[in-house]
Each structure stands twice: as C-alpha cells, then as structure tokens.
Length: 174
Image 1 (cartoon, rainbow, N blue to C red):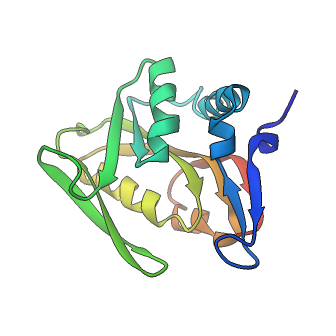
Image 2: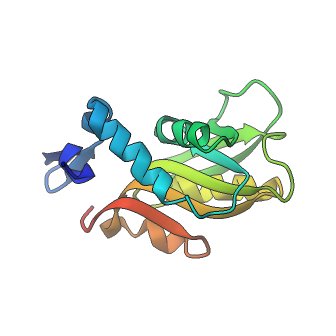
C-alpha cells in the first residue's frame, strides 16, 4: 500500500533554484491518493470535540468540506477579500512580498463554537494565523488546526504556538 507521500509530486527548482515544490495536484488526481489524504486528515480530528470546520480558500475547501461531510459538521468558508456576498469580517496579513486580506461572513461562527481550521499546507503560517484571528473575532474557539503538508523549514508552527497544530506530512526543508 502506498503512503501519502508517494502521491505528492516533488518538483525541484520551482519557483526558484534550490526550492522543492510539493505539488498536491498529483494527490487530488489519483482516487486512492485523494481518499488517503482525506482519511489521514480526518484521523487528526477523530478525538477532538468541535462544532464546525473552517477551510481557507481554496485548497482548504478541497480537504475541509469532505471531512465536514464525513463527520456531519457544518463547513465555513474563509475567502479572499471581495468574494463573499453578505456582511463580513476581515484580516490583513503579510506575504513575502506585500500583503493580502481574507474574510468570512460575520454570521458564520457563533460565540463559543469550537472550530477546527483546515488548509492544505503550512509554510510561514500567515494565512492560517489570520484565519484563526477571524474565528476568534467572532467569539469562536480554535481547538485544532490541521494541514495535509508542512514545510517545517519555514517555521509556520512558531506563529501558531498557542494552537494545537497537526500535519499529515512534514517536510524538513522549505
């Protein structure tokens, strides 16, 4: 039986020399790989008491929605600014070159709800830190953050020290 790492395509020197790009499209394009990814991520929250799953655009949707479906939990979207039709709350965060802003519907999290955040990858942790702050601004409690992959060399976990963080695959480099 293949391990999840066997489904991830590694592309050297992309987007620049010395970087190994970890491509999840090869996981998604293989039925067994996709099944293993969802099951492995779901395993990370099987014993967690939570009310709702929140996924960050866009690959957090790919992994978060099926986990929410399987566990019969609601699923909430965090999107790039300007993509949601109702009243929103937003957070800006820094990127390597510039900044970005994400938002969620103001009524998507109720005070006291326990939240699991889901995304495909943790690199520097900026996006998911902003997502956690959004949840907390609405009175939610982030009880766990899960990722398919972690690029440990970029030290994203350090930004998320106050949260319980788990990843299925951990790569030591960048």
